[in-house]
Image (cartoon, rainbow, N blue to C red; front, side, top):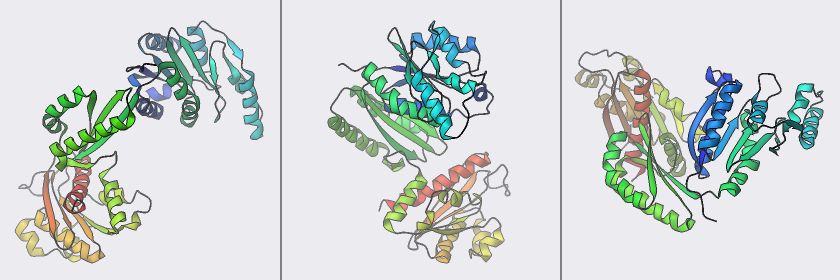
Length: 421
């Protein structure tokens, strides 16, 4: 059976709470990622109020322009949950009792020693034209509809209930209905370079991969740009993987100095993995980043495997009295300087007896204490006892973003100078 290269999906999320910011729409995020992995193309994501006219309008559009419409929310037992009745109205249908759902609802409440209220009993009423998708985690079933070659799936808005229905039933049914293409994604993580610079460097490369029906997506975030290679087709998986390996290798030839991983991960996870695998330890001395780098690294469980500790030396006297930075170094170079950052890293490593140390010092903003040093000037350094490397960052005036970028760049300075040797 020939595969469908473009099976378009609309994700419709129903609920006033989504529109007023009371609830974050994690369902749409999860569905979008999962659709991509299954070879489906998401055409749009829409949040809709609990209003019949609005729901009908968006369903009509989706059932005309998309092959698959995934609807979440509005299936609860309360009066404001109108999705089921609205969908029945769209399909010119009536609600009927689904005995299996009724029995499941009864068992659900019996196991909890709770009575089945009339509103709960109503969960087993479904449109007669739908295929019922059992909800093994709750009471509201999912519903599968087909019309003129288009599919609509309605599911509860509770995330774990929706995911359970999708994973147990929906993905297989979509695959059978549309014969989805094979799909390969490769994610390349870059740091310390802008999206536009990468695009310029990779322009000839993009033309080359287009001939092989491979697409490149740029996914920027503060300090990092994620590059995703994607291939859709009806091909031999092993051969396609080998072809993708060749193109990943070419990317390393073009922009290898900015790549820190061939898989979707963070620079901090790269550090943690390297230190654990090589049995190395790390300490950190922070000034302008205020302990942010230490906080990030210790968010991961078992960070103590490699991270010994750190010092937040916000005041100059802490740098001199605890980190033993020479006053003469500060007087000669300024407290915001690579020379001071180097001494902070070197002495921090000695103080904690670690294999590596990272240091930061600078003016994160929104102001600078020195008229000769612009806001956003941050000096970073790393040391392993034998060598010490440093760099000066010229960032903007956004304090939060500056701290975030400084942490990323300081972590990458460690990786770039010691992890690839």
